[in-house]
Amino acid sequence: MIDRVRVERLWGSDGVLRADPDRLPADVPDETREILVDVGLPRSLGPVFEATPVEQAGLTVLRIGRAGEGAAVVEVNLRTGEVSARVHDELTFVNSSLARFLAFLIEIGTVWHDAADQDDQFYADATAAMTERLDAIDSPALREGAWWNAIVEEMIIGMI
Image (cartoon, rainbow, N blue to C red; front, side):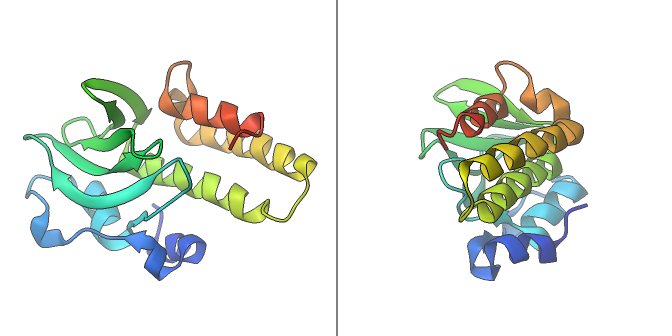
């Protein structure tokens, strides 16, 4: 499990958004509740993710943020635990769980932090190593057509 200290070390305490436990539905799974309330999500990770106050959307969905400069809404399905990105009425698979989504954000945030003042070769090597770690965390999230697949591809070619 990802802990609060690790998240705050990367984004700072002001850079993390946590949910008000009293505003979450009672049926939120424990792991999801712990991440939203205790650990938190990064307020901003470039064009990849921006946390927003958690809001319920229907009986089984929590909206947790935006992506792609606001073009997509990032959601957690409370029945399956999956994280998806919604653009209009189309859903794209993001991660198998909120914990895996946060692990991906941490991996990407760490690469961007560590490579900030480094050369292109450092960034390329760090991105290749990160891709292997991401695959071990949640391989379906990197399959063709998945949301992260496009982001990692853009990182590999240096677009983001």
